[in-house]
Image (cartoon, rainbow, N blue to C red; front, side, top):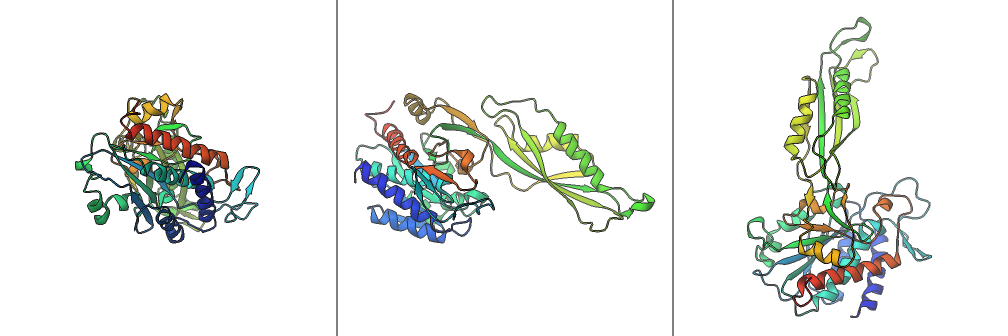
Length: 377
């Protein structure tokens, strides 16, 4: 197939994906469509749960691997949609529908570029494309499940296991970045805060109000200044997003209070450092517990060959405030794709047809120049 045909097929595929609800953990329908698409176009697809993948012919475990990854799950549509979120209409060069921008456009563009690139015989790299699940909820059934699946490990001859990764192995993670290079990404640390007091009758000013301890902790966290700032990601950012007590009666002093802190961590701090610093500035009656430490901040160097190829092709770079599957990969990854992150999760989500087409062209150039020794920058 030529580039023009691939572009047409990619747009039709995205329309099919939009028409099928694929909320996180409910991606069975879109996984089937993606499997069939790859099979129809000459690839050999495989499926692990709701994750679909294909490996280009000529796999050699002694060579480095380029992983092309994006996700096919979506959030649920918000209440402000004026269009049917599952009706993939094209109007004035825009394709509307839930998941069109995040991250359907990147996904179909990566699949298109994979099909074009897989036909190249001069590669000195392995090429794998993955369409994964549960990205929107950072679920364990997505890219992590795939990389740890016994069949996938056997097919890739253990080359993506942490202890066996080739030094040059890397990934392109498809997300809406306006086709700019997101070389750094904030880590996500969600902390549950529990303040402990003693119950009592509010009218008699008895007890020890846990809510006040929680408010003192929240204020201390809000006022905290982080010394180590990142040139790409700025300072660590903390936001309290939930607070509640078990009380439903107005006249009982709460004995406990729960709150949630959303922490976006730059690459200058480890998660444990962040937890220790926060714990040191809050009252002793309050304890912080991390829900997960999986989604760490990530950085791919400006000297990395993939980034250098992007720079040579006039791409700009930045640090991304959002988190993606890039955080879960055990090797360097560049986040890059068509669409605009500002449209993600918005009402009447859309992506430009021209953005998809440019995405396919750009992905193909990056893949070709990285994996073909004659074209390497």
